[in-house]
Image 1 (cartoon, rainbow, N blue to C red):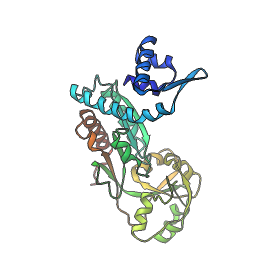
Image 2: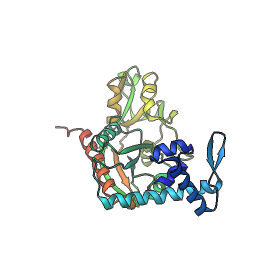
Image 3: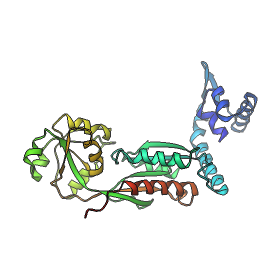
Image 4: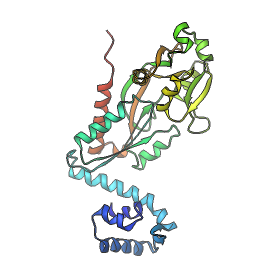
Length: 298
């Protein structure tokens, strides 16, 4: 991993500190890479250094090889959470229960104190396939009407679809029919790319209905505050809504459209399927999901 760090950190002093190497050793490593590549790789620019075009082209292929090697040697030694310095990379939707990811992070750091955790946003543009295949992600967490068949998956939990409005919204007093709900002003996620459809709108498409979306936001966690101070309607999972209704002037109402439950999964690639570290990570995620699952109604 040391050679990769030369490109991650362009300040040579920071490289030396990060790697725990003396300056001559860093210079020798850079010289060796330059000889192998037949290119300077790094050139001076101001007070620091910048990669050449050849250096830039090397970064991603080299990083992929090094991640695979790191996984190989980690599994050969066996995964010990107490001593492992593994970096776990997770992409997740922000419309999950707001407690979920903080609890996952806490669980990992409690049992694997030397591990590093990176949480990345999950978009619906399909890039997570490539990131999983290249080892840039270990796990993807979200919900799909039909999960990708070319990835391994494990179901985490299901949730009822509800609508959430301000306590001042007329529907709190009057209720609503399917037609009045569709005609109300809805807020929905901003599409990640042209033609993208959110999970709720995909469900409505399946029954031939369309709602009146008058506001969009790229950050799901901001929507409850927007709803609390407007007449907008947010439709999503009950667990997400309940966390915000506890502290904001919001009311949860039944959704008049007959929609299936939201099903949440964790997905991973074949390359990490047998990795002891990745298996451990998936078990932690599964355990946290189980702890948040609402008890069955009596």
